[in-house]
Length: 148
Image (tube, rainbow, N blue to C red; front, side, top):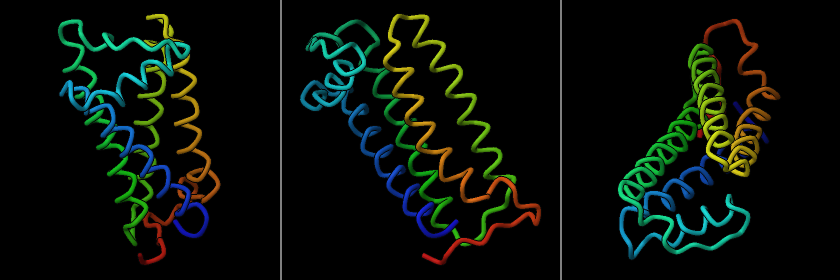
């Protein structure tokens, strides 16, 4: 991957990493303001400082933050690696699709449709450069990215 698409996915990865850190902060009351702010965003800008108080909530949100952080780092490594097999891009893209379907369905089923919208924006931010760059269409097995 190279050019604008490499830059785009590098920025996308940075956003995923920062949001992951923000949500991971839910584990500690002193660091949970970012997670509370995210919940306010997806709940129609309703600020509820007690949103993380139910049992298990801090754990669940902080683990989700860690997973998102991992997604961001994974994509960053792919973008910055000079040779990436096509199968890796296909596998990661399929994984992103599965995540999107399950997470968005759960968001709708639990009454938080704005999270499904955020998911769609996040997925589009990933798919746009992946599809436009052609990394899924190559048949040679290896994709050469600009050395970083």
